[in-house]
Image (cartoon, rainbow over all chains, first blue to last red; front, side, top):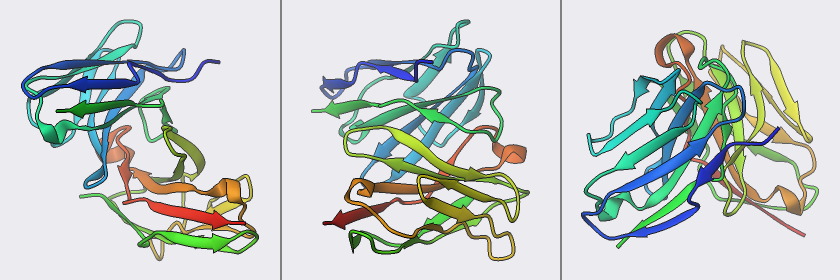
Length: 113
Length: 114
């Protein structure tokens, strides 16, 4: 079974631009969560989607948004990029969206100049 | 709120040494506990998990026991290898309050020298 895939793997943007990241979960998984990883803040939860509905949201500004499609694929969008948004963005999928095992993708590394 | 505290790193060991990485947590209810490992340039891989008190998770020689009385989930391995060099994250998921949301510790960088 294929694992979680994320595209693109690397991105370079400039301040003020917007960016969209994509995540395809493991087949059959309906829950997708997004995390931001930085050296200073570690791993921080952004949001979780289950059956196309945002079920949980972390403490990030409204510039960070996401959505999930009927095939469980998810996208996250960051508008008006800031230098501090440079990070590794990780996507994780799970079957039912409970306190179960989450399987992570390789991440998208975003650099904001 | 929920939180996870890991021992401060980095940790440097010689091959075949014994490894312990401490992890304590604060959570409401009865969380599930996890150890994830991250190799350079990669995402997180699940190493092991435990879902209730006194459960022992194990995988690839690593073990951790869910201790509710001490709110701990320490990671151990009897004999580390160079290939174990990576960053290790302790995490919890408290379904009653946060669905699939994982709360992570700070991560511990492990370097194993030959």
